[in-house]
Length: 235
Image 1 (cartoon, one colour):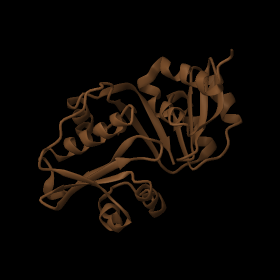
Image 2 (cartoon, rainbow, N blue to C red):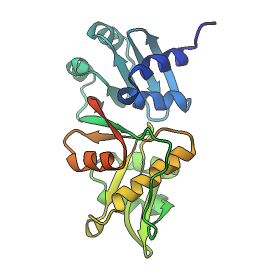
Image 3 (spheres, rainbow, N blue to C red):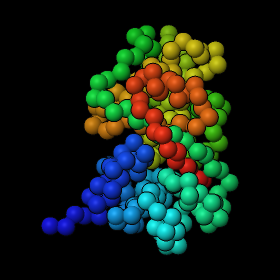
């Protein structure tokens, strides 16, 4: 019996699980529309984030898929030899180069005992919008609140930071408020996110800016494996 396109895509992407985990998540959670799956690459659309994602083995395969690629508001590419062609086609103003950090252990992470975490809602919009450094737009933030994907960390009833999950499934949006930094809250909040995903049978992963050395080191200390190859988000 032939594999389904989704199964074929997973088989290809798992050849380099760490590099491709951002594409594996939509397939595993059933939100991926497979646009192409073959021995030379995969292209899919994540129906939650409306992201087009591509990983290919050759420039020829990537160029061919680019010609038939539908429009979207967000793109994820995995090979540097496709970056210029993507930029020329989609002309997105924001291009972010990241490493992928994945927590591949089944063991939960420790968290700070006196730090509590609770799900945020739209009443917390102002503090998140004010402190989150990436301008993702009000609509995106409200969607994250409505999805129950943003969490606040509190000590003695005071918010010390927040974090959550992006639409495509990566952990992120991590912010520790200025007066509470260097107290271990960031690592503890990441630990909370890791443990929550492990409870749902999912592999926790983050997309970390290649120049964000502090975040890279924190992920390493927590036991994440960092990819040697970059991925690029265009939006």
